[in-house]
Image (tube, rainbow, N blue to C red; front, top):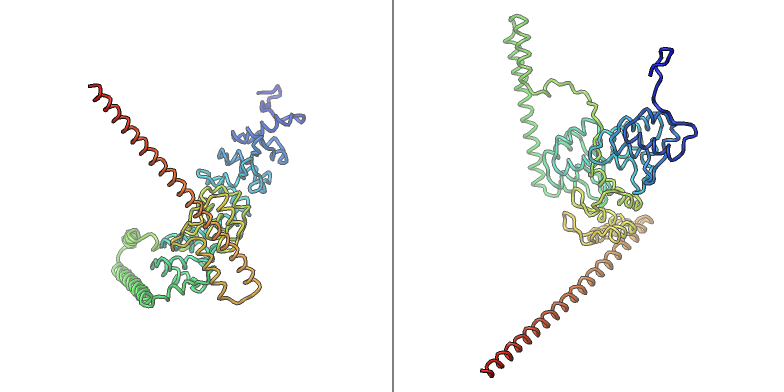
Length: 435
């Protein structure tokens, strides 16, 4: 409203110094929900960490309601960056977990901008997952995009595999050629089991020779096309000599438009937006936790599918078993109800992977670390053997119980039918006697 002095008097209500604590909490959280930045700014940063009965803070609520300007203010101006990963509500969910959900990509980008820890973990894990998936699926376009943006093409996952490992396993020749000849990927990096991409590549010499011949033919074809293009350009330039400059320029522009866009686009490193974190990256984090035995992270994970496999259908149970993490194995089997009989692409159960790992360790030098790992792996193997045997016995017992119950039902039903037949015959006899 207008003051008598001619200035504007704000009608906006600011919080009182003696404001009731419950009223303050309600006002802050409601403002975060509605996107009321003016009221939020009226409070000190130290007051904005309050939470409601569900332990949800202003940051939780602003993220849930896609209030981007509120989130940015809380992170940038109030410095609540630690709240992103540490503030847990009643369901053990942090603002970061909420931001990962579908439809909140802009919020997650704000987190990437103001929270260095999120950038260093989530983004790298997403890139690794995308890189290895592209190698497995032969997705050369994704490989090119990652390479052009400076991603290391030798990045390894929780099992030590690279994109080249998976590309060679699936024999995706286009992806293999790009990774080997363009990206100069290391063919001799070992995975957890000591296997290299070169081992698979050189296993079949005839197939390797065909692969190298195909690459040579492809390179010759590209060279021929390049020379042909250069000759055509020289011929066009010679034909243009002596013509008016305007005509020459028009012809040049017309000819340029007909070429592919990449022919004249300068090779400038593009600044791309950070990728959205999806369920795939949540799955990757779950695999990382299984690989290092971080059972607490697995317990806090909001990813509901603990029996989902990765690129080669390895589950977190396979990964934890191969690494000898008995605590993770027990949690997945007993608390998450993951079947110990689940199989990967090679039809291997977790116990088969463990046996293979024990065999591999037996062939290695008997160092203290080796012996310690062998003890851990053996413990996991014994657990699987006992658990699977108990499941089999329980299944057989249930089957026998069901079989006996079914047999009893059949016998009782047969007796009932017999009694009914006797009763019918007795009734018929009485009728006949009466006649």
